[in-house]
Image 1: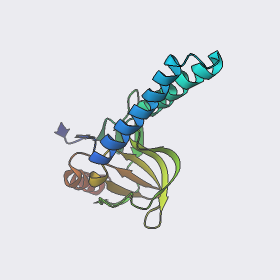
Image 2 (image 1 turned 90 degrees about the horizontal axis):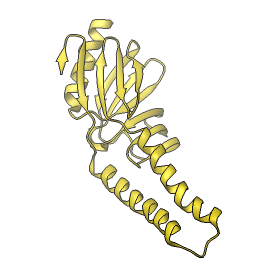
Image 3 (image 1 turned 90 degrees about the vertical axis):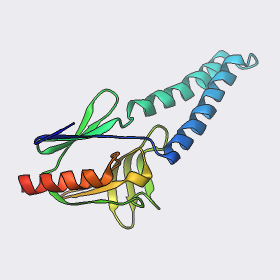
Length: 170
């Protein structure tokens, strides 16, 4: 959906996210099932083996990235139950960069269970916030006070839209 004040973009999953999420989910569910079927453990250990993996999955699922929208002077990042809002007033530049997350150190956040989200750092970008599902669609937004990386379904169209937006809001 696109009009003068709003442009919407999906957040499809890339191959890396699909693989990491599938493998991690299988392992976590396997541990939970194993905790359920093992009769030789005490109740506290069994409860931990069941609850901990399911809690990890639920916590990561809550922070999933479902889409992006440019609305007014803000970028809205759709999550499972809320929106993360990033003001675009201080936008210096935007570019599609499939290598943006390469050689990044995760300082805090999720490294691939349903999304790549959180605070990361690498030599090229410095410290940045990531809201990414597809590494190949990564778009870097350099704002006055921070750097944000997202992955809209149409990265070049997103860069064009946010650049138009920058010209409108100054």
